[in-house]
Length: 384
Image (cartoon, rainbow, N blue to C red):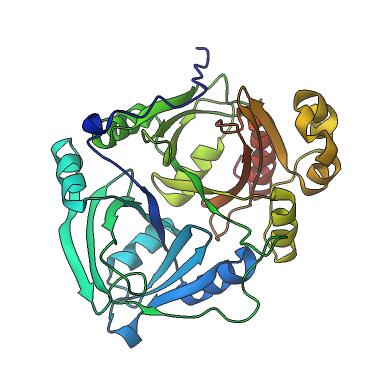
């Protein structure tokens, strides 16, 4: 089977045909073992700012949540206050991981009704959450594994994140400014989901049917393979291109692939990594390394032909080599990317840092180098 590559997303449907308009990703909520310590890590390692809090002090009795922001990225880190909660059960099974990928929509009731009518399983019917800050409209549906998608409309809400939260201020020195004083990390570029063997097409069909997304790129096991392992991947995107969800499944190989390792240790399907965009990846990676973030290592030989493949980066090749940043290009430009090591105890969730210069792809020219780097980490863990 040869890979089929569509270089750009399909054109956005006409407004009358867009049954599921999506503004973007409102927030990503992770269930973690210790929300206070996780918040400290994301503040001091990645440069997020703590902006809101919910817990016993705000009248919430079963959980504690810290809301962190950087650029247009919003993370919610939630831990349990009891062994009997769904949060505790989720964490016991999966470890630290993404629970909710929340989507900003213009009309929660419409989005929920369309999703359920098209086969999504509803979890929370549309509900108003109110406090002195106003009204936030919210609903949620099931996605792969134990992951949920929420629909959020906050145009009538002006308080701290959501009802039940209070505003907090970051401590001194926690922000990680870029060279011009702005945030290092700007927005979520895409979120990758890993699903079990034989289920990729099912979930691609789900996003096409439920959200009206279009298949952007398809990578076969021949396109994404090394000597030892392989996987298959399809990328679905919203009509306006603001939301992109690659879906991966393992493929047969001589040894265990990174997807197999994730599924084994996460104990099911889930979000594998969050890709976040930056304007200056070299400065960003330097700053994150100084703050203790670990990245995959790339052999020096990878850079021998980079200037020939992507002449636009020749002037910064020494910096890219020094930081282990990968380079790829397509018909519309080039991109720079690097991947962190897993951020928790289990070899599951990690982050990608990406800087795009016109390119809409996902670094397919780097797959071999990337997968070999991941396999070296797997081998060190005894999981290859």
